[in-house]
Length: 173
Image (cartoon, rainbow, N blue to C red; front, side):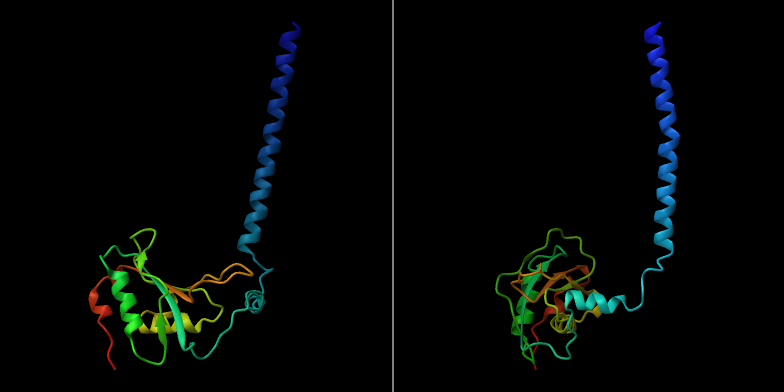
């Protein structure tokens, strides 16, 4: 008889916990949804705070020399090498320098070309994007951790939108 009473007591405890857990989950979900869909704590001047924290500098002109690395994300043979040669042999107001050989990206499924700025100045990335004829919307900032520096100013990951060799015919003035 004692064993039956213990089993009944255990069953009653399990049943009483379930409503408490469900109510807690529902309450937490409602609070989370209210924060997501009513972000009144976000203010328009928050962008200025972000610029100050990350020290984003908007300069009018690109530096004289921009160090780059070019990765092939399209799966076309020698695409990154051709693009890197195109940038390095281009004459103009900015000198492009690649400290290492062109290489393949982690995967070959990039649909669009991405320009990654490793510098707090957006000007170098904008100049690279202008030269390879892609828009500013393809520029991404990926700054190094505090106290560290990147080996290059800009990384270019070539996508399938630039998989034709016509894009990288050597430039002549």
